[in-house]
Image 1 (spheres, rainbow, N blue to C red):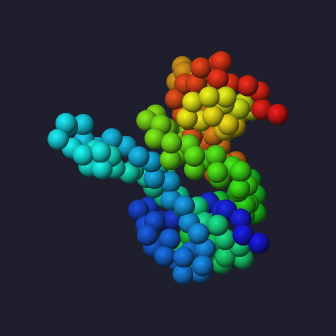
Image 2: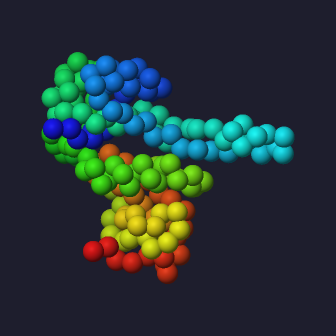
Image 3: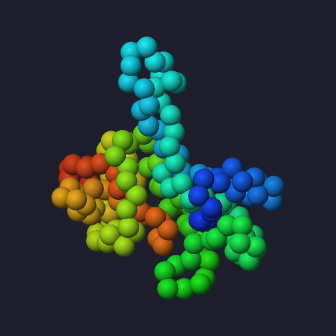
Length: 170
């Protein structure tokens, strides 16, 4: 059965990691977010935007648990485990979809934070570019920010979302 797993890799080697996974027949996701590179009037929209890695040493692979274990044993990539354990833990498909939506949304203030900060009541966004997404609200550097987490791997904080666009998650 295929599940998403997060892998640490040697910094700046996503192409090698993707090649290994794709050779084995598995899908990959490397978190690239769109950023504004050129603000001049002469730049076309394609020239103005570029992509930057959100987490340069992390790649997500939809694979079998056997492949994840084989990568750990071969020391080519290191799968994430839940804190305090050595068990390789899959990422829920729903968590992966929310994470991808946040990264690919074009939000200018995405920030990788310590996943331990993502505590508190779970909320659902009612409107805006994150409509329908679930996450947490935390206070980060004095601002209330919407946080999307993949437990044990990463938490990303978006920009401020007004309270009238939030509802308790069911």
